[in-house]
Length: 188
Length: 222
Image (cartoon, rainbow over all chains, first blue to last red; front, side, top):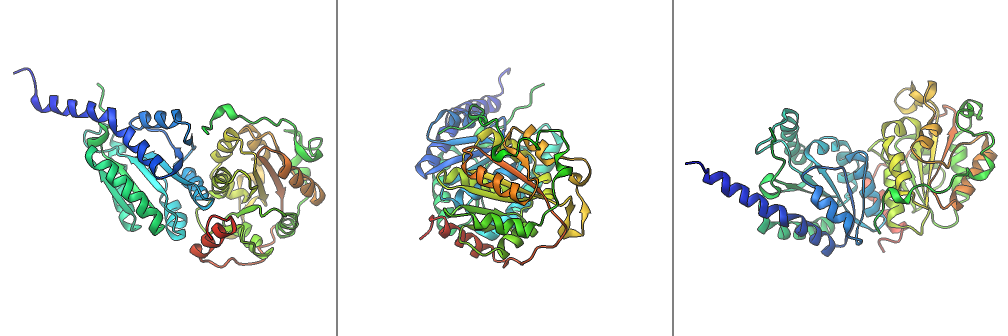
């Protein structure tokens, strides 16, 4: 047998997801008046970042560090503008101080989207190690966190969680799993 | 509105007539008078007439802002060292009609230099950055910063694309530069050499109350 049915199914699933997940995220951001999106680039998030740049509804730009992006969205929230941050797992590892000393104690509903690297086929040891630090940090801060693996749950989770973040004045982290996004694939 | 490098810095001339003694590389930092942070903070706040937002950086920058008289438009940053200018930038983006002022220390700015490049790239018309440079991490025991010896924060700001960046030569020059910054229509950075006197007040450490009062002061909450 030359075909591996598991692999074929997986690659079919991945290509379907690549077509759609970014549209759902963009649509839910708009539906919830999230106008500012500050990011530090990530390969997997590239289609989403491009779509946000192409949509005149959004103000969007790259920050030089994830911590800087957290500061910017905190200021924007206090100024009355809802905003989100996009980053990858390794970037998350640079922001615990900003979360613990600004966002959480000030009760700022920062909306944090993390492209999950370091799992499900990771090829970079550094990414795999840093991924292990993310959930313990979020747990220790008591932060609302959702790992999103399925396209059919994406809109519901984002929509409800943004509403909850704003209503309860608390940050929320969305970890977008490779099961949803396809992740970054090892190229030989 | 989609912002990006296309909105690059437009103003080339330093405001306030400070250009003559503030040309890059002329050693202006070392000729500037050593002033006092609390005195300059009071002078700055006294000129605010339009509910401008002021973000006080961690430590003595916000202690002196607190001591200068509490305004609902003041935000006192208790933690997150380095994020004064990013927070101010966020407020400036959210409220383009309001002028926003960041008060930051040299050690804090050195921790987050990339924010200067971001501000220059976005070129908000309503953001002024004031840097208090005493060449020391004063609050942690006066360990010297790189700006005490070698780093020129105005040159770094200019190199980041913030052409409206100047050392204040003395108190009058500071007033002049600040008045020009408010009207500049481009992001402006003013650096002041300051002495090592400690902060005058001590901010009440209640982050929720600080954030809540600030949002009401900005008209975001009723």
